[in-house]
Length: 91
View 1 (cartoon, rainbow, N blue to C red):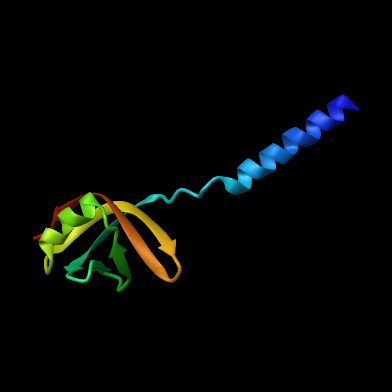
View 2: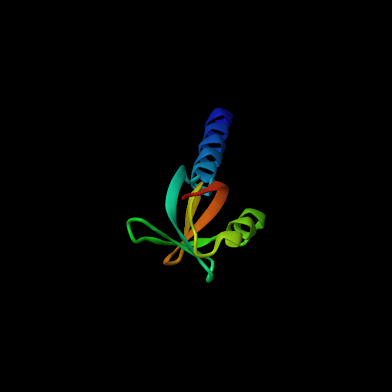
């Protein structure tokens, strides 16, 4: 009886962990023009909102320029939020 209870507790805990663990986005690379409204439009036309953090601030120095950004994309509602890990100015 004790073993069944332990097994049930263990399985319940594993199920909770499985569903509570956030899904981590894979790194992606996007090339596009930085806009003053904190967005970047990729070459395929997809618009990404640049995350409001230190790296995002740094990217905003290049408004109107084309940059290549490597980072993670998270979807919040109908918006794609681009979390910048690194970037470089394209010529």
